[in-house]
Length: 175
Image 1 (spheres, rainbow, N blue to C red):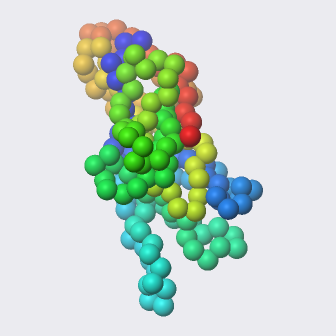
Image 2: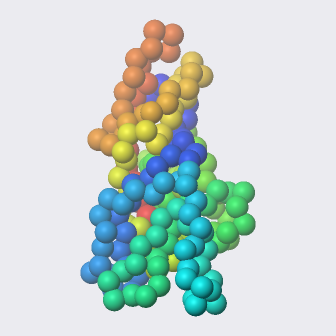
């Protein structure tokens, strides 16, 4: 209500829960991906034969020798995304399937819309956790509102020129 679009702020930190793709019982809850910080692979000289790409997040699972990584993928990147996130707005998907991330609009009500793509190697995100500053809204008066907090699944704002802006029942999923 009163919202023209909802978008994920580019470069904002993202909080997800992940699991090991080889053993589903190994999980890490609520890890924060710093999307504005691309880390170069720190591979010792004797392991330079391994191709490890830069990433926004990396961890080594218990019993594993290689690092599992996540990289936030922009639609203009050439990287292959193995997961993307949709919001009802989020989703997980494969790059190359024609899915392009975009803002969420009122006509998308009740539908999941792809708003984030992740390239994952050795781990799988299974839950998204809004932290409070990763979304922005454009209201009916075409005024942009930053730092929209959807951590409770709802958000509202009141402005004299545009009235009430409201988002209810915000849901996310990875597919």
